[in-house]
Image (cartoon, rainbow, N blue to C red; front, side, top):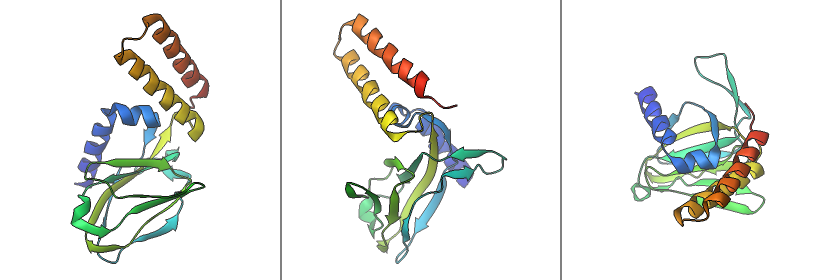
Length: 175
């Protein structure tokens, strides 16, 4: 059952333009599912840099970590995902079906659940672009191109801007 659900999650991600633009996935680790009941938590940690893909002899680099929330936040208390960075801590407790993606090297934890059950799917992504800052630049550039396209901007300028996007993508891609 978990395998089928994982394939469903991956199929949805493949059709999500925002996910593709933001993470530029090369490989996605098969989604895992977890349940945190009352009193359960996961202490502060960083995710491993390399993972062995199940049922294969292949390894993948984990550039990004992802948590897909599967239960509405009002159905449980506590259970927030807290991601720490040099700029402070960010807490996430999102609606069912919402996804948070963050750099795998950031410290993070799941606070204790005090009521109900927290259900989530977690997985890791090897991006085509290893560096967070470059990936962020490409995401911003792609979003700008999409917004300009919607406003009917000058077609020649859009082609030039798109060429720059793809030039950077080609220069920075690791496959």
